[in-house]
Image (cartoon, rainbow, N blue to C red; front, side, top):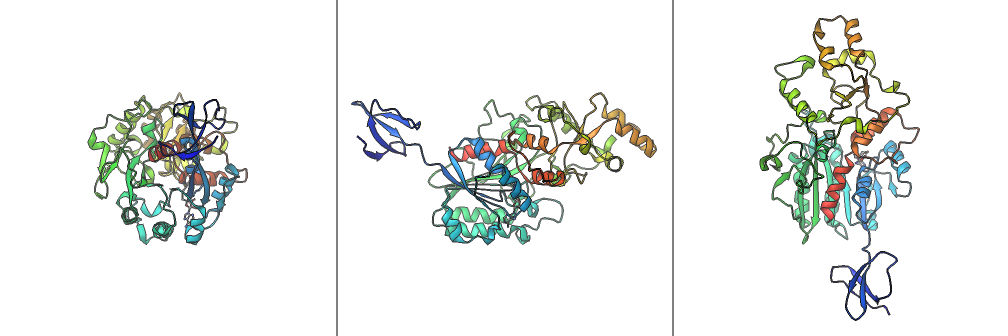
Length: 439
Ligand code: SAH
């Protein structure tokens, strides 16, 4: 009754009698004469999650609905690993350095896919801090590049996430050389969650690589895509009506200003001239206004914790309020934007992420008008009217696209939670990229 064969669509199949129904959900292929071929469901892809942190890649993989299984997650950070284990208790978590893993250990994992977010600090564009391949934190990444050509089975797919700035690094050049020598085809992206209607800027570099002869139908030679390739789809909303010039930018072009999007982690990108109230340039204000008027982006209120029991740990202490009032990025509940949350959020105030104005009836401009002329006490009185607080870790997780079932173990402190979330990624963006990579 069963006859093994090779499927016309690439999978393996078995012949079965027409009355037989698949209980496993295999696809039916009619062969005439009452016989049908049942396409066996393809074996799930075996995924290696490197620099796994709190499992952003794992959640993105789940969201992508690709048939896949994480065969190992590797990270050296014990706190991140606690969170990972708490949420993925059945995934093999390898708590060691990547460069401490032998070729044999990699081979035994027999993986088809690598998902990885190497440490981004060597590539962030704060002046003088881009040590790139000279930074010891790049060592593990260079080790991966060294291992890749020596694996007994070259993985079919690779997805890398990093900060904007990686695209002009020597590490990126080395990655490309390795991919080309291993016969991969690849496509780079610079994308932010705002493209998916999420009110949070987190401009990140992504690279998708696929083993040849497979190709990407959206591939554009030597260009970085700044939109999802199917950006005409109704579910993908552009933050502006970008022209082709804005959609593409040249890989490796160190001078190019990739985006006007302001991401605090990457330093202040706007000229500090023509100050208005709150130390803002007209350009800053215009950019914020454009974002807030973009109806394709959801409002901040959709991501807030409902009925937050005790907001007191999140209110900004008076001392910080006074000191940093003019540089805080303040958003209201009906705003459609927030700046990139980084690992110092909740602890360092400057450039680590937006804060929330919970008093909806008080205008910012009223509070900051003639602010300089006020005494310290008066300033504090004015500022307290805004009822400014930090976003909670759950709210940042919501903006990042973490599902409701994600949680931190109780022993993880607030500061640790912010730190881990600041290092993580937007799950919806990566899920979409995984789908594009594998389809
Ligand atoms: N994508 C992850 C975060 C990646 S941040 C998430 O969703 O949370 C980079 C991670 O790399 C950090 O968790 C850090 O602990 C880990 N890391 C840095 N150097 C490493 C090394 N040499 N070996 C293993 N893990 C490393």
